[in-house]
Length: 446
Image 1: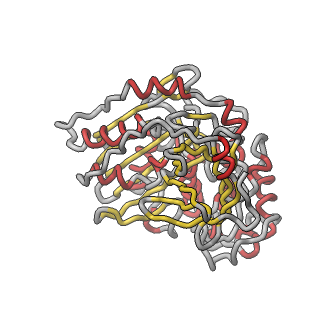
Image 2: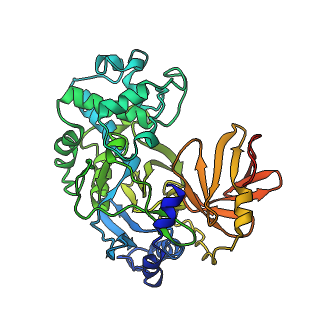
Image 3: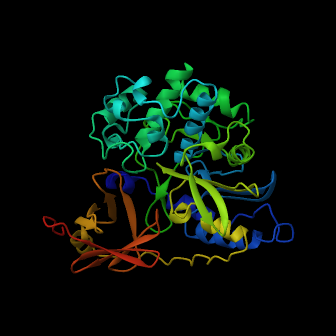
């Protein structure tokens, strides 16, 4: 998200309609006791501009709670609905992994196979097994998305970009979340099945399960009822993200769906309708959590103006689905807070944020520069156009607009983290924990 682009894209006036018209949920406290607490928690985020989308809760096939808020299209004043489609980002990985499981069940591959059997021209393939890809243990580095953000790329071009990069570690000897690994898995699915990735998911998963509102995003294609994605601006404003072609998310984040379809997907996982996930190598596109003395399967995603969560407590067939057409800290805990509310654990309603602080241009320019976050000295760059600060992690061209809450402290609405500037540099504050981020040696304010 380039700063100049951000300044052209502010849509705060449209978003004010959301703030004065809080949505009602479909459940009542008598029918579903946690409904009132869920409403209060979600409405608090709506008021702050940090929730636009759908929340669905079901148990044993019965929907017990639905909540819809915000706009699918701000410029055209189109509200989100329960059947609005959203890009699901990394929730896509649950389908990619399922495709591998289906092909293994047919005897067409084994997850212990070397990748070179299927992608012989991929330079690192000789060192990698399929299960390394599934378990985020391949060491593959993601492609340079910024270099090709605005155009369509083929799966093979993506793989060439990935293969040209050095491995971050020897396969099987480390663990790092990897989009690149799932790009490779999706290409394996195509090679083995003879179908395009999107066609395979449609014929083998979506249609058999009755997921009629799901599919894969394609370059230039129009998807009816697909919400537009937004990113946070200053205060409650929402902005257009930097354009990204959906081909960049091949296999790792290019599925779109609805809350109802994803609820159906969770049921299929619980009931082992297509394959038995309990027999598969972890994580297999999912995360396993122990929350509230329950075993939970969860996957979340965030990409280019969208964020999502799907989770299930398989023993109870208890599902929570969150689909949003904005990025905010609402989804940062993978739905743990929402699940807790459903199970009777109170959660604090977020306080209404005040008007953003006015910070002089000279002060903003003083804060601009390069910082090194934490013990690993992760690069953190602060830019300014004289009106706002924008945070960039690493060497990414995409940035996060920061909201000033005081003259020296700023809020990152995508994570609810805060950055406080000090004489020594900065301090990152997340859930009460403070991490030092001193200035890089060569960086100077302004």
